Image (cartoon, rainbow, N blue to C red; front, side, top):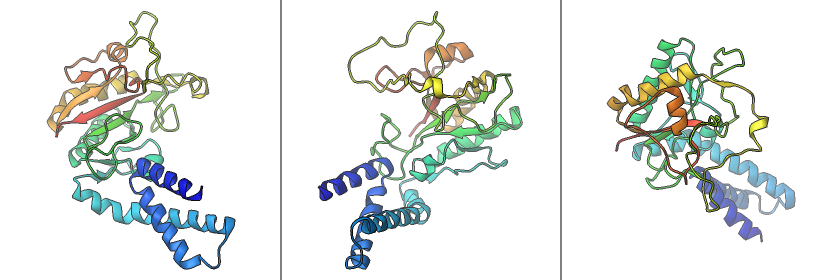
Length: 275
């Protein structure tokens, strides 16, 4: 049973972070070599957990970034500063190594954030899932893409109940699943189906989220920039729910619907650049 649990933990950590399984294995080897005769039961489990966290932190901070460069990917900065104008919506994206992109995507995000801060002073642009550091084709669960450094999800911009912009704030702790609501007059994008689909509604979560408004001016401005100036940085596709694109008054051949088997895109914007 212990072996099965270890194999499962290795698989899950590898799937989520790429390096988590390796960190677990190295931590287990360290504990086995240094504490086999002195540790037992919960003490051994605690030592293994501590060793895993220490090894994982070292790999994430010092080993992964230079190795990722060999695969043509760079880490997006996690924290906000005024000069940069953008940050991760949650520390979890950097902690799980889901903040790696092609250098051209990093440049695109920097220019978008600068444009938004110049157009609307004080604006903070937030990114969500990007890609893992290594290996084209390695999936970023639960996304159907995000496997080659060329995809990035961006959070919407939000305002409070009075319409005042909320800098650096998303409606959910991780930026996803705070869905906008289609108007009753909007044609449904997808019919209800009993088959497998990632098009979650997360209806149980919606009442628990803060009642922020979509900042339509900023979100519209970001979308218009992506489908116009963004072409210079190789933008080839921007995914958004059709009803929301219509509501914001944004149209472009680059603006697409992701389809009915993929996750909803009225809680974030998906950006993709050319190879």
